[in-house]
Amino acid sequence: MSLLNKKKAITVVLPAPHKAKVKCPICKGNKCVVCNMTGNLSIDVAPKIPIQRAHIIKYVAENIHEVAKEITKKYGLVPEINTAEVLELNDGQYEVVQVSSLGGVCWIVNRLDELDTPRYFTSKQELDRFKQGWMN
Image (cartoon, rainbow, N blue to C red; front, side, top):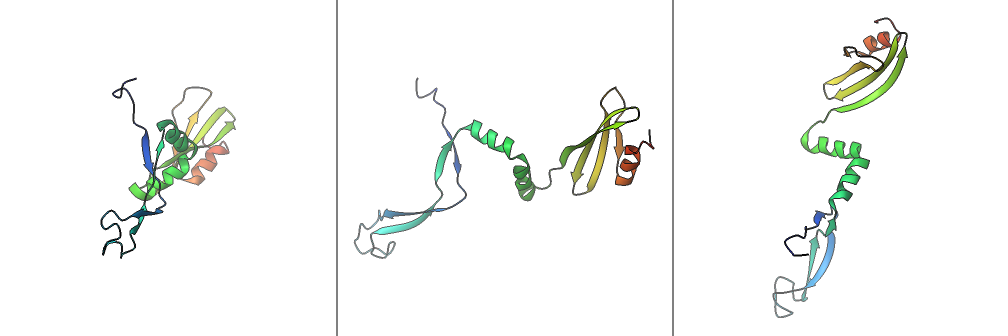
């Protein structure tokens, strides 16, 4: 395999600093103000390790809620969308999808057993009335 066909490993900078001591490249022990005549430098470095793209994707998939929280902290809110429940009412089966954001919560109710227009609820009371079979 030629060098042109090799893919470089993706590297990730670890968040924790790592202390390292190296020989002073300037003085080598001869009257140096950089290392205070010790011949050594103490530095904080961020170690890099090669990580394959598939491992990054697997981590994100397994920790999507924590990743979303960190993205929200750094870049702003990402609405959270979840299937809250699946209901069996008098005339059919419904999926209740909850959409949560800084502005509040709304629910989208989709009929699962036949084609029907989705219903939208902006208050918990309206959703509860629907779940009791009052708004069919």
